[in-house]
Amino acid sequence: MEIINKLNSRLLDKTSKKCLLDIEIYKQRALMYAQMEGAVSVLSDMQADKSYVYKSGTAIELGLSMEKNPAEINSIWEEEIIKKIHPDDRLKKYIHELRFYELMDSLNAESRADYTVLSKIRMKDKNNEYRLVKHRMFYIYSPDNGKLRFALCLYQMTLDQSRQPVSDFMIINAVKGEIIVKDKLDYQNILSGRELEVLKYIGEGYASKEIAEFLSISINTVSRHRQNILEKLKVKNSVQAFKDSFH
Image: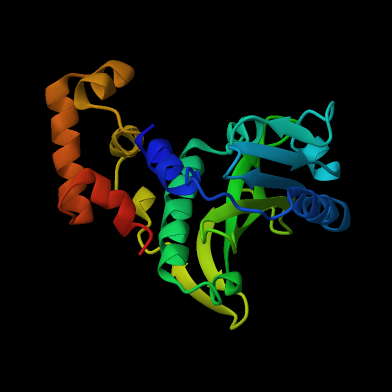
């Protein structure tokens, strides 16, 4: 996926000057969040390209494995959790996290702790039904090399479990209580079902020929859908359609 490669290029710390933050301290913090908030807590180490997943009762509700707690993953992507997220929300989550990184990268070090991601996403539960889950994400930067060292993600059941769960993506200034970035464009009400499918594959980096094969349609039909998407969303190219959805 194009968006995953872009995120990896931004997030993973490959600099020669290593961060000296003690990971054990941050593991304890991740454990505390899981225990005190009943959350699934994921600590990702950008320097080591590893994640540590701490699970509570929420993990059982989501049908996640409890065999290893914490679970250690050789990647910054917690695949068992990510695969439970609704495909549309998964792509939005990736794009939203890229925007969060770019925002944080533009701020001075003293201001970064004020900002966080706050989202509601649809995830499959133990019964294979979609439930609304609150997702929060925090970044911790290294005082040694100035690079992003840790990301802490929290997953909790929301209080709003309506019959038609609606996802929501925000970047907030927690100190001021302000929304900095919020979904602007609800393209699900603008595009047809097939156009949404095409847009999803475009966002994942697939070429028109591949999209045509996935959807069992002609390349000409894919091209027509691409053009319709651009006209309906009033953007210059298909990738920009995703970016504009999060301004």
